[in-house]
Image 1: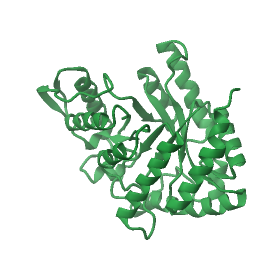
Image 2: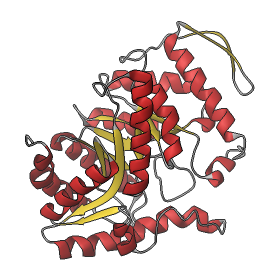
Image 3: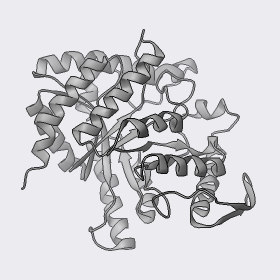
Image 4: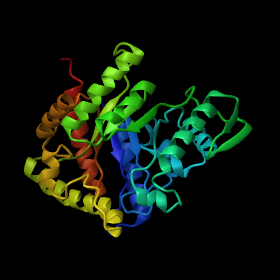
Length: 337
């Protein structure tokens, strides 16, 4: 079992922005030392939910603070990018990290965020599909030629190429089970935020489509689920801290939606309900290990993604939770069965 980390890099109330960036880079160095496989960074705009609206900028710093950890955006919001420029950024990051870059693609989950850039939610999917096609052509050819409704390129020399050919590994976020169809056909890794029963429908569908298109499980891509996690010395301690931090994170998540009088009804506001719906894990190392094992089995996962930093968690709290995870939880999933 490999473990990853997903990070909204959301605002910690009252904290200095420069301090948040520096403390998060220190924590990411800790992920590297702890044996975390991959760091996935969200992209959001005009909301305290995400302080890395330009993921490539922050990830360039990650490349310099780590030596083994793979990393990338989860996801690049493709309708907001010129795909030619994005190809060049991806190539740079892949070289700056010695071939450790991985990247997710998507159209953007919030209609309000893309609207700030003059993009309508109804046209965003078509722009996304066209941008993705440009990316794949650019990586596969010495020159980029493309004529579409939204993008047009004529014999652009692809001077920069990535270390990993034809391109770094791809990731895709899956909400509903039917969303697993396309990434399974393409052999793209997936991450879900859904409760275990829904995630299980998605992973079952992914496996079925994968087998129909690619054969056996030998090279099955990663199928993960992302969960908030806080580990303390005792269950009581962990639950108290996690409940406080989840409330702060939830307010960050809802900030822009509330501004427009909307509620996506994705996450519950109540900590206990969130725990019952598999969204957050809080407890001692033994409790956390047992719950991770349950969710891996229930959701049919071969990859588990943790959120160690969220809401108003201080650096020291996240680092301590990570240390308990690395020392007492992760080793339980490396033992021979």
